[in-house]
Image (cartoon, rainbow, N blue to C red):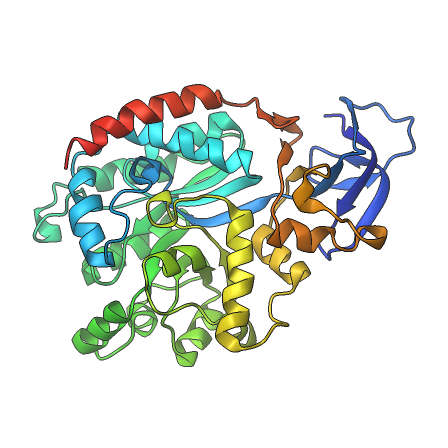
Length: 416
């Protein structure tokens, strides 16, 4: 596929260096300077644009757009028991598809091209992601919802469907793959956790789990097993380089070393943790010192309200500085790298957005403005395909998505 030429523009590379001039964006995710005589798909005036890598959201529950702003102001467990669980018992494949479509619309509109998701009925989620043109790892559970009193009472149909999906391979020429969801150590028996880990090994798939999100979870795990959650997971052989551990807000240095040794991924979700008053936040400096691979995620729209990774990046930088009394932690370059780590895709931002001004000498203020002030996403390119152009998403109908969401949300609320 021929590249796109963006003229008179700025490109911020992975090291935070700003390049000026005419740029070619290639379908394979690389870029080069343009001589002006290449065959291209189109030429875009980049005078009012800055090009960056796209955001990568490593912890989501996309269908929970349906739950956005439900139970505001409730403590965590009351929020779950009164707002979330009662509706989720009535969730349907159709509702999941509608919620996912709205979530993906928000991801694209805010410059995100990848989500690592965890939710029920993954086969209702993955096709939406594929059709919209972004990338994803869609992790499904091995047991039904609502859960039985014991795993043995589950009829096994959910597990069979998940294995079928795992064996079917990826979608969208490799853009979207299936994985396994194991909710948490306090909701999954050891048998369920081992089953998830075994599936991950057999199908070479990611295994996604909530880990050490709350102090109670950590204390209860230690009381039951004599170990903290990550220690416990390691003791049963759960952790690997394909394990995605979301939150990690209450983690010991010993556990950080375990994560590093197993090459597992720890996902920082600062806004969700603050909104739900978890009291603990991942220690980014300690994680990095231990050699842990840290990623950034929003969590679902139910506990965050937003899937905007730009806002998540800002929160990550601020809370780490605040908690460690150190204004040098997560400077703009490192913050942007954390939020876009692994991206192969490109987005452009509107330089004429007042939030990005002033640009400073040689545009040196630009990256900090993007992180701390915000900006309007104009274009999104994945594998050479334009998903959004000139501030309008073209790979899905955004208006239809939110109209369907409004109708579905009313139905969903009525279940409480």
